[in-house]
Length: 411
Image (cartoon, rainbow, N blue to C red):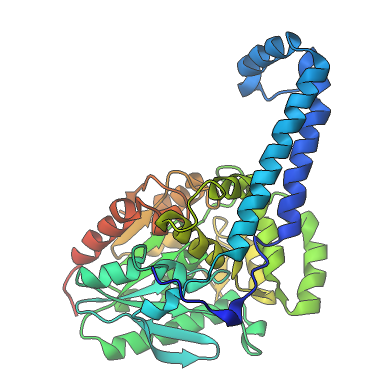
């Protein structure tokens, strides 16, 4: 992997928001110390599913000397915090790889800040629709973890919608406006190709692709939905306090005209508060010159180089999807029409990763259940690992390629 520097992007300030990740790690460690007396005397409340393990732990703690136990736990807390900080500092100091130099995507259309990138190749065109809140290049991250380049080499012709940060026009966009822009991109594709294009959506991009497919079924050969949320109460609703947070979030939206990246990152961090500590502790153990470390840096740069979400689109998502579950209730409207997966009459592939902390499997399964004759695959990976992880090729890339190849050759 190239290690050329990119001075215009230095320095790193991530993981974003850094203060939240550090304070969360410190709070967790301090609460461990504070809970020791209760854990030792058996008065600490535990979830029912942990009752047996808690009883064993309490018995073991009672055999320990209190002061020695406190010192041992404090030392472990300090070790973990120091290891996390070492990982963060190593990441911040890592040479930036010029990952974009190898990418084959060529801009063939632009509207506002949105671009359409052509990855070349032969065969059926495949329009990939990523999320609005992260960089599109996660689908093409590095030479050895780039799904679009690999699909091109398998005989497909990928096109990627690169939303980028909203400009002056896009700041007023709702989800309906973004889907209107997708329609324009699809029209460009139809003009450039002899075969009917397929459509692939990732995460919230899957919801956008679903709405587009409903409107343009006659123009699409098939639809693939990757880790796409639908039932926002299934599997334990994410951000359950979103309605309580909305007054404050609305003030931010009014002030900035968009939901800033750091606020988005804080919301995602709430889904797994200990994730940053775990992954940076692991990163601290890696050889900085190893391929694994280089991949970690590339992925972490993508995570921290997020995209603000336009105010109206943010309200559609946070209040409509997460707050009111408007998708399942049939109340998510695009151009006045409810988005209804049950009306699809084209081939549909639904990928539901087994270890997804961002989109619970039950949320995505509800979408698969609502689509007549949807084919479901379950990659043994997480939300992002399904796309860029070591097992991404066998878990997602290959099944997706085979499904695309099996679509009708109709033009």
